[in-house]
Image (cartoon, rainbow, N blue to C red; front, side, top):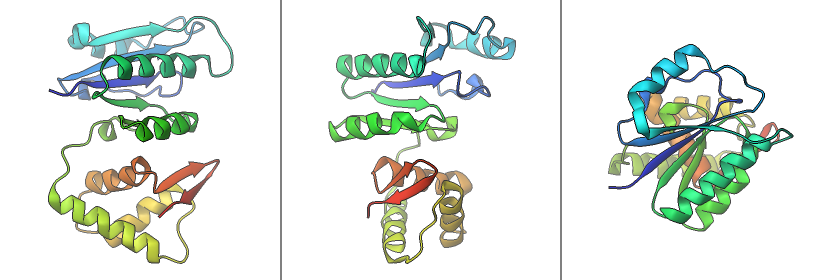
Length: 191
């Protein structure tokens, strides 16, 4: 069975529902040294996870201190378990170059902003066809969306019959395959 690990940037993702974590996923929640109290609701949700959840209070302060801790533990995880599927739950796009590098080394890793996108279900052949069609449509498009929200809207207009979660998984896959990258506040396409 493939190990699945979720790395949570709690400084960046305040709203988190740990009750939605799949039963086979291990979780590391990173929080800052200045964060004196953890949200009570989060602690209550964490209890059923038992030993599958680790709290990681970072050492020290400074710009990107928490991000460097996540990067260290992510690298350690992939060194010890190269076939593990990892997800970083964070809005911080600073993780994206690291994620692309890990992809280039053959690892399965992604940065997500929603827990539902952390570990998408196995891709079905029909979804493979949808993904190929999506790439072709974007390749032909003369004016492509500059924002993620616009891209999601375009995918919705092209695939109105797909469930919202499936459409979001297709968009995420564009990022995972490095066909689309976020740079600053806009999207860059590599089709």
